[in-house]
Image (cartoon, rainbow, N blue to C red; front, side, top):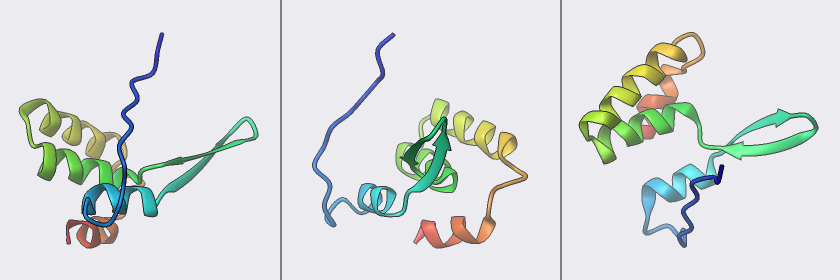
Length: 80
């Protein structure tokens, strides 16, 4: 199985991607630390930027699955 990876230059002109990479969430698994996008960002990105039927369904699923840990104030700040 091969991961799905996309490489692109990131600078401040790509506001959503710049925010995603400059505000990572750190997770630690078996001694390794990974930077991943905040779940709130991923949900909003799917709803606002991608906004396809499948993306909206994915965002709804993520909101349900992570409902106990989502921070509403972060979502409001990220929309800006």
